[in-house]
Image (cartoon, rainbow, N blue to C red; front, side, top):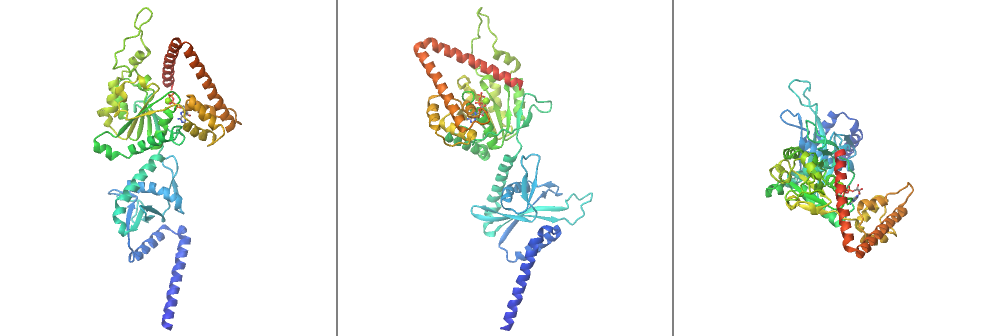
Length: 500
Ligand SMILES: Nc1ncnc2c1ncn2[C@@H]1O[C@H](COP(=O)(O)OP(=O)(O)OP(=O)(O)O)[C@@H](O)[C@H]1O
Ligand SMILES: [Mg+2]
């Protein structure tokens, strides 16, 4: 008995000594030199291997014959783990890369985090080992130390973690780096000899969250975009270039340009703003398209006024002046500068050239859908036609939240009733919600909006009365007014774009 109790005591002593050692190790771990940590780690691993039911995969930082290339897999894991690390790791490292807009956090050496995949837990450990060979050698480019990540999981889950989990890590990392990437806005107005595009950082703050639109329509568009961006295999299978066309149409100020920024921000794509009037001919257009990168939104705004693309298929009789001489129209003048034709444009967006590069979204915007050549916007070319309409009550609620931080108010009912009767663009509603002087609060802004809507309703009623009084004459005036406005708008837009 005495022997047993002595054995028990010595086990207890060993146990408490081991616990003490472990406690000291944990306490002073961060002050210890790396070689001690690596040594202890490998010793512990060997010891644990005897009882181990785990499988472990190592992902070294450097790969290649001479270990001189940073491994893409390692970098992807680093990005993937940054989210977990910032939430759970105790010791973190921060780094800033040229391409990212925020610092990238990663686990510090000898730190670990747990992840969960399909209900099963896995452990990620970040380690490093010192390379004993002298690093100053003509023949040895191996770094002094090698970092690696270790993935540890139960051996029963081998299939799951060697295939689907690693795929999941790669996909997530791709998504995360796209989100964190510094994106660019390209224009073809002032390209140089080296590139037909010039660029600035794209930092538009618009997002689907702040876009005023019917929520179900918004969700539909977001789903469509997500499905597109993850359909690489599908497009390859059906033998179609991985691109999608969006046509955004609606009156000025309904959010077409804002929607483009939302799309680019949502998918983490670059934006190419293609000014067709600055493109000399079809071959330059082709060159521009070939110079666009994957993961981009290529935009042609106001396609109806970009060039005389709208009527090239319909034979138009030339306009004549009072003395019956043919009048040179503004569009004809443009045609002399830009010789891009409708078929050139169709071929570039939809023909063989469109296969160059992939994952591209092409967006046309227009205020006048009815003026466009049907060939330009047929399904398959412009796959998704989205009407950007006047402000609905649902859209107003988004604006009220954005601008006034308000989700309900006594005046909401008035606004709702008025928006049912009056067409007002989200841009005009937003303008009324902006405080006019620093002290304007939500009450004042909403009152301003109600007044503006009432005023607009008054004008609309007056117009209806006039039309009833003299229908033919007034309808003719309205048509003329619309025509003049349309031309004026086109002119202004062209001028504005040329100036920029
Ligand atoms: N649906 C919307 N949601 C949020 N803000 C909007 C919306 N529509 C317009 N706005 C606001 O109005 C401004 C003008 O909108 P935007 O330039 O997107 O309109 P547009 O439809 O492109 O007009 P245009 O046809 O004249 O180019 C934006 O800067 C934005 O602040
Ligand atoms: Mg616009």
